[in-house]
Length: 205
Length: 218
Image 1 (tube, rainbow over the protein chains, first blue to last red):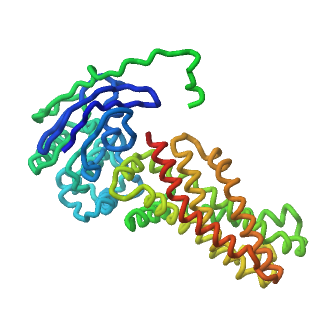
Image 2: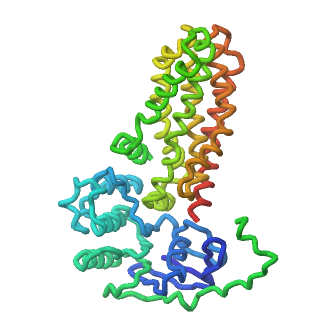
């Protein structure tokens, strides 16, 4: 479903990861690990197609990816169901009831999204993944601000998604208790290029 | 895409959406002009087409900086960029939504504001026509400016500096068309040139804007 070979990523023009290779097949979950700043978000954004790789190849169908970043894409003045129905419409679908139920948002469906707590917003952001109908989920710290019960809902959703032939690639620091391959990015850290003071043009970038 | 248009219109109409802001600004500018230049009706009639056009242009500028910045802040822009809608389509739809909430009300209200400026009678139709033709160009050019500055915090001032020079051709031919109409002259080349500018901007600007957004998302 996803094959990454020799991938190099840069952030702000600075190479931070090199020679990352792994693959992900249907039904599999893979967890990215590594200290802050190692490049988990950059790798996920590169795979999601938001920035070009500096080296290597990503083989996957871009039409199969659903990306969820640090912020949830929620409009504060729309209700929960309006937010979800909008994203369902963008992906050419209309049914949002299953997604609302899966993340226990039924009682909040007419609440203005701006009035939700941080954890409820995150649940709404994760429910968006279900309405996309996409097979490969790219998740950046999906469990931030979730309580234990909501994390359990998320794990259920991941299990159901993988059982239905989907796959998930996520960066997280906690142990979710799902059967997952891990990929520690520490060993792929790019060597810092030697600074040549004469060629230093960061001020002009 | 229809869903995106509907969402943007809904957002504009809800609290803090900014619908009517441009119109109110336009009204205030046009009301202030007679205080500044004096109540001499012949002077007002002479400068009316230019002032009305300038007011419409500034009103259009007012709501541009939120066009993509809000979507960028709440993460929607990242998600839209990975959605099945092409980014060019997203830009085009958002420009249309901007025009419907800012440009179209200005076009419809312009004749009323023309009265405040003592616009000569034959000018009303031409003023409305020139704004109807020109404001779509203002929205799409503005969307290009907004996509260039989307990565910047508080990019509103830079946005104005970038966009206002690009508005000059539209302003020149739009105000010229309204002026010739007000003086009862034949519209001449201003009409096809204004229409041409609008059509060219509508056709090309979404591609430039989408490219700018892609760069800014990196």
